[in-house]
Image 1: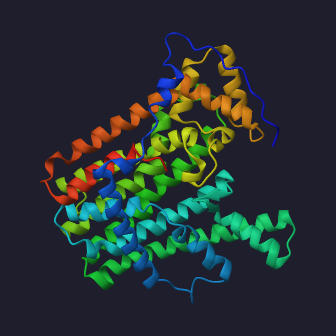
Image 2: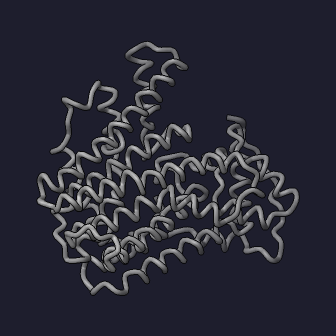
Length: 394
């Protein structure tokens, strides 16, 4: 990496928000908020239940060879937040359902999310996630040590094994959903509907969103709009969150009708929270702490991700600022100094502030979706969960 050099910061225009004020809008840690602290404790309990269930359903005799087994379990063992699994269980409880009956579905969502991360990291060529090497990178390193492969051959091997591990995780997801009927007595018609929804509606949306994310980074900004970017973000992230809320409610009510008012309310709630989650992810990709995130901050800049932050900042940029951002965005060889200046511009030009406002807008819509549900402890947890979507710093 090139030696960093101090770059002269352009003078802010009067119409722009001062940099210090923009920095003050960074998300606060939830530790000082009793409501959010309680939420994290409850999420932790659900995460433990899901991990215990996955340990019980582990198949070391089938998840083979060893590189595949390790790839399947890498992110599950690394300690994800289990937010999707938790919102599924909270949604089940919010309609007076038995959370225990929904545990296989929560575990399925956790494994399904893991395979999307495995493939996403390959696409983004990321080397670290959750503070550990990404699956393809971990396997590459092991292949160099144990198989004595040269770096290029080991890299190809790592990607190949990671793709296969992700494929196996997807298959495991379906078997976990089948346990709803086999083990928990959930209506088989409902289980089939959940499998259809996940494998057709969610998967097609998610893959389209991932493909658009890649394509957008190759397109000129003029070819995009904020609406197209938001649509891509929902498909990448919101679709699976929507499924989690919908599935939890359907299991809790023990009926397969996605149009049931309570099911629709929780689906809309989780969908809007999912968008807020991705917007907050984009903010953390600019302002986050690498130690808390467990992945490099600034990688979105080098990859040229077309986020709402970038879109808004480029709209407000002057000629030289715009030229610099367009040169730096998508440049894998951008220096630390260039990345730092790009981050400063994205803040000062209002991109981060605008995205914070968008995230808060979607959380407000999400909260409004729950008005028809009766008050309960589970509803209060969902409301705290929505707030966490825009308060988290990891």
